[in-house]
Structures are given as C-alpha cells and as structure tokens.
Image 1: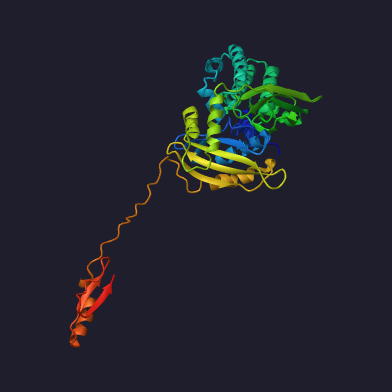
Image 2: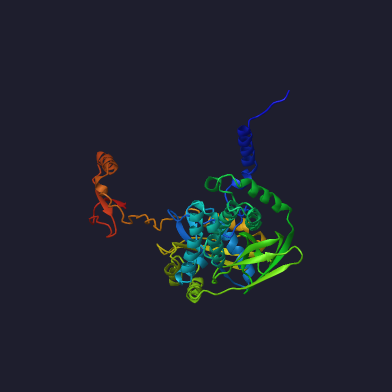
Length: 439
C-alpha cells in the first residue's frame, strides 16, 4: 500500500528532524571542556566576598610551579558560592587605567551597527560592519569576553548566507567552529533557515586536518590557554588542534593579560612567541606583597595586605606560600585568608605534599579547610564577656547547718562562742572556748 504526505507536512517534519539533529549545537556556548581561563565564567559579585589569590614562593620554587598552584587554587575557590574570585591582573589593569575602553567601545559599536542592519533585513550592508567589529574585537580580546567575538562571527556567517554568499557563509561558520566547536546557533534570533548549513559545517570539523602549536612567552612561566582550554605553562606545546585560527591567552601575575590569534597548519608546527607587558602599577603591588609576606601568619592584617584592598578593591585575600616538600619534586602550600574589612586573619592551613601537575585535588581540600567556619560578611564575632568578679558570699553566721550544730552543743551543757576566721585572723576572745570555722 502506498501512502502520501502533503508538502506542508513534509516540510514541518524536515524542520523538526533538523532541529533534533542540531540539538548539540543548541547547548550553552563555551569551549566545551569546563576547563577555561575564567573569561567565560565571570562570577556575580552580589552577595559574595570579592577575593583575590596571591601565590608567594620560597626555597627557589620556579614560576611554573607557582602558576600551576595559582590556577588550581583559584579553580577550587570558585566552587565556593560565597566567594567571587577575581582576576587580579584585570583588576590591576583597571586600577592602572590600562583597559582600552575607547577601543572596546568602538569594536562593540561596529558589531551592534551590523546587528541592527541584519535585523532590518539589510544583510549585505551588515557584512562590512560586522567584519570591522570582529577585527577590532580581536585586538582587545584580553579585556572582553570571547563570547562576544563568537557571537559576532556567527552573525557574520548568517549575514553572508542571507546575502546569498553561501560559500562565504560556510567559511565563516567553519572559522568560528574551528576554535569554538560548542557555539550554539541562535535559532530564536536568526530563525532555522540557515541552521542546516551551520549543522553541515559543524559535522565537517571533527574530520578536519589537525596540527600543533608551540607557545612561548617572555618571561616564561605564564599560564597558557588555547580557546579557553588550559594547555600548560609556557613554554608548552598544544597538540591536536584543528587547522585554522585559534586564540591563545597568556596570564602571568603582574602582567597585562594577552590574547593573540595564532594559526595552526597541518603540515608543520607553528610557533607563537609573546612578549608580555608588565602592568605600570605592579611595582606598588610587589612592594605590598613583600610587606605582606613578612606578616604572614599574624592574627591581624599588616599594612601591606591592607594596601591590596586600596589597589584592587577586594574584600578578602588568600595567600598561598609554596615551598619544597621533603620528597623530591614535590611541594606544600601554607595558605592564609585575611579579611581586609575586619583586618583579621580568618584561617590558616597547610596542604599535603603534591606534584605540580596534580595540584587540583590537594588545592580543593586546602580551600575547603581554609574557609571552614569562616564568616564572609566582614564582621567579627564579639568575644564572650566573662565576669571575673567573685560572687559575694553571704555570712557564714546565716547558714542553717551552723546553728543546728551549735544547738546540739548547747543542749549538751557547753557554752561556746562561734567565731569565723577569715583573712584578718581569728576573733576568738582570750580565755573562751571557741569553735573556729575557717572559710
């Protein structure tokens, strides 16, 4: 028996099936591994204590080890719902006036103009605006979320598709999915017309040619991320990257965050070498850290610690002092948390020995122990007042048991005098029979 379906029903079934197939692309945008550089994971500050982590070293501990510890400890503290762990390098850049606000604003304006033209049904006019905005966003990517760039690239692909440039749209989608494979297609905004094209492009990415990228920095020892995924401490090589453009983020304490666009070629290994720029105000922070290091462990926050609040506008500070452990190539961390509002030390713990590449577990345990029983509101519990004054004792002459005993003696025909002997000595009259009670 033959059956037939109307064209309208087939089109709806096709659309539904397409949406079901595209479900993986409709999840939240991100790099997909939950191991990002923090730019996509800004924590809301409302109701949380703004906190920064500073790693100090002793005994010749290398900067690479410190970077591993810092990343692991910051990641562990971000799991604490009462803390807003801040990127201190971005805070320092803001304090030093190093955030390129004009350039960021110009880039966003270009993208917004392109989006408005796209919404007005003028995709051909939207293309140059979006192109210009993307170029400008790439230049300030260290100070904006990468999601902004991904959204702009998606919009450019849609604009090209709507303008009839299908091949150019595929190239734009591929450029986006190369570094952002989990980027969602915004069906609510752009409709489902070009979703199949996006889906087809996404399906081709896993089969694309791959290569590696060598990442260096001056100075060395910076945390390196590729597309938001941590790959190690410089110098380091990132393997298995899809051929095309990727974004490398480098973070080193005291230096401006750097994000560079790097190309990966399947035929040979590319190298990206970045010279980091030290923050102009870092000397102030370095001097404060030297003073703070000398006061670690004290019950009260020393002036060097309090300076950090003036520079970075934070409520709490966590210091992690990394030192060599007894076993070779292993380390321990002495951690301290100070509240810069109450100026008090809230906690102090020492970690178990660990290898730098396995710092995540011990730093998770350390962060939990460090904040056990800690208040987050900057208030200090008032000490319990204990009345040390001795209660005044009533006169022993008023005790019932004393007179009961005296009565028994009197009943026996003995006349006595009852006296009390205190600090001033006995009051018994000379020549009298007395019962002397000392109290």
